Image (cartoon, rainbow, N blue to C red; front, side, top):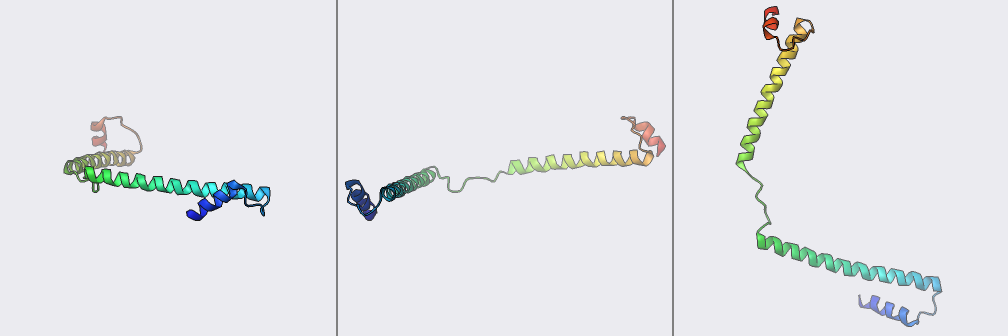
Length: 114
């Protein structure tokens, strides 16, 4: 980092006379980009340390993701959906067996044909 600062100082003082104007401009841009990247990396590191300390403060290192009530509710919902799907499949197979006609909820007529 000290070498980069020294090179930037030489460039600003105009002591790099062996370089052309385009080379000095490109060198200036690259030095400034490198300096910005170092500053950004330092800020990101500080931010990461701040987030880690905040997580430790709130004890968020291992969030509580297990909830038994969600699992039970999901099981009941899945069972109800399976029953509804099976009922629809039975009705569809009965309708196909009878001849493809839809009975629009008239189950007595459907049962009589079987």
